[in-house]
Amino acid sequence: MNKVAIVVLSGGLDSTTCAYIAKNKGFDIVALHFNYGQKTLNKELETFRAICDVLDIETKKRYEIDLPFFTKIGCSALTDKDIDVPIDGLDDNIPITYVPFRNGIFLSIATALAIKYNSFDIFIGVVSEDGSGYPDCTKEFIKNQQNCINEGANTKHHITIQTPLIDKTKEQIVHIAKDLSVAISKTWSCYKDEFEACGVCDSCRLRLHGFKKAGFKDEIKYKATDI
Amino acid sequence: MNKVAIVVLSGGLDSTTCAYIAKNKGFDIVALHFNYGQKTLNKELETFRAICDVLDIETKKRYEIDLPFFTKIGCSALTDKDIDVPIDGLDDNIPITYVPFRNGIFLSIATALAIKYNSFDIFIGVVSEDGSGYPDCTKEFIKNQQNCINEGANTKHHITIQTPLIDKTKEQIVHIAKDLSVAISKTWSCYKDEFEACGVCDSCRLRLHGFKKAGFKDEIKYKATDI
Figure 1 (cartoon, rainbow over the protein chains, first blue to last red):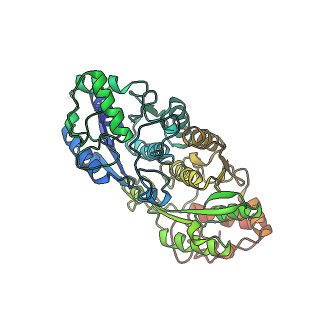
Figure 2: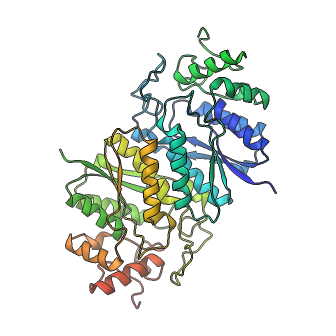
Figure 3: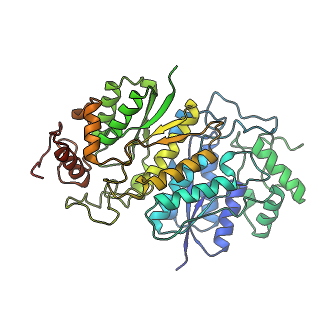
């Protein structure tokens, strides 16, 4: 029997590539998706299901977790209807799209599932170097979260948070996705829109930049592609 | 203006005493309650609201957070309808009432609120020494969780997880509660029942034992009090 991995899967390019990496390493995947009131919630859920289909993940091993409280907390352009998603590019500050301690919450819930499935491995597609500027995507955070998990969980084994993309640039991630034949056309990264990707939010910009540097054309449709 | 504290408040004796301690230290309280599919959910919610009333916590600073996914995960006598709440007392093992990584999840969500309210202090009434045997109630876990929070949150200040009861025995907690005039009759600790406390689940046993050693009579009603 294969070892089980809990994979946090939004359906974006990074998390999807991360799921392919887990599959490629021979793990039996338990896929974990969060509806946390993000503005592209419906599209992300559709994407999650499509990626699960492609990866042949059993229905009972697909967890769609509702976390409606994120909209009560707000404070982020992704979850607060009073804050617009920025379209002018990143600077050196923590972006307004940072959702308060989102990855801490996601990884804590992933831990509960790891306990349930007696899994030693949680995969998450965080990117530190060439990424978003989020404090909950750094190596230091992941190390601390892993220590915390291994203290508070009732496991006799050690749980590892696997972050195969944390050091990669978006260009490198595109190459990895191509090498693994990731169903790129089924992924979704846009923060802002659900039908055609906007092309100008931070997430679209990072993605388009990665494809351009890698020398490939992205396989999803954009409203604005003159970037 | 007073400093804000985020207080995790189930409405049990420990978390309620913890809330009184925060109030007594001059904090403005944001109270955080979780409906996670526990068998005594309705009673706990009623208790939470009553304690918030007594402590005069503003309505908009009372957060009742629904986490229905805990019942999907199960694996605990508190959330899994197929597992009975044990009534035969504790032994040296981690009890079946342990809810997978519950405090890790609760404290992660408390962190999101701390970011929202620019709060430096999260209070939680965990008890390590004379307590439940849960791995997510230890000093080592709290220390690791705090490190993790301070790496992953976008705060310029340091967040402290305040655990004023972690080293206390139940007997000492009863004395503290009495000293602070805690509304003991409004608290609820039973894992099993919602009308009269069962008196025989682990939580009732610990509570009754504490009152007995402290030399006080508990102020809530029990079905069975011959312990």
